[in-house]
Length: 143
Image (cartoon, rainbow, N blue to C red):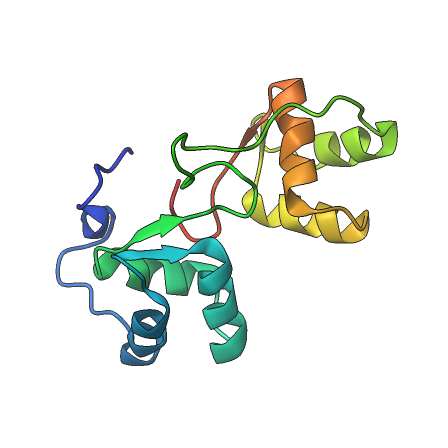
């Protein structure tokens, strides 16, 4: 389901009520109507909430998420900054492939692999970009 900018709450049931605690934390991080993926992660970690809970509140607030930590969306002037990896460690590629579900790597799994291999998160998405592997779903529910 593709939701147009400015109708993020359309992904959720009508009448959904955002958590006041998450909403207040998000308000402190929103700049010019946007919040970064990293700030959303900080909110989730600080409040001991899931990324999806935080993402849902951000959607209900009609706030745009930017600067995906995998480099997939929210950058200017282009939407994404990830580029295909030039060199790929066969162990990393194998680990990515073992996590695929219907040919896709979940965002959460990409983050876990970056931690396991002590690599920046964008390096995992660069491997996927080089191998034609799509990443999704997003932990925040952005895609």
